Image 1: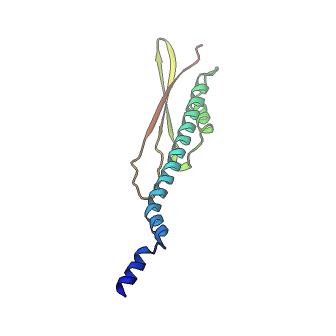
Image 2: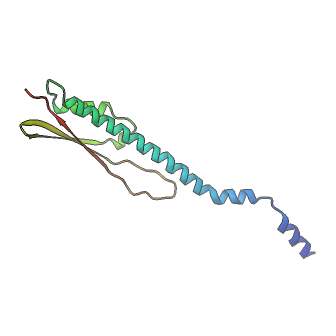
Length: 135
């Protein structure tokens, strides 16, 4: 009798799908969150480069724009990031070969959220040189 019960339980496949699903669910959720965060990262990176390009364009316009106007044009063209992730832009004036320029440097620290995997912070830094209009 015990042998017959053991034989019957060995052939019973009910619940196998649920057991396999519960074993693979954490892996799939982590993978989905990783893909979503990677997409969000590249979206924010594109927004950051868009804002930096607009700030560089504003810095080259005649008559010469002040730093506050350049910063405002940068902030107006950003997209893809939350308020807590707001990047900082530094404007460094300089001159080379008798021409004035500004170096625009942006530092961005995006936040990553994965379920079970700790993610090291990534810092992006972009610099663009914009030549100021001459007199």
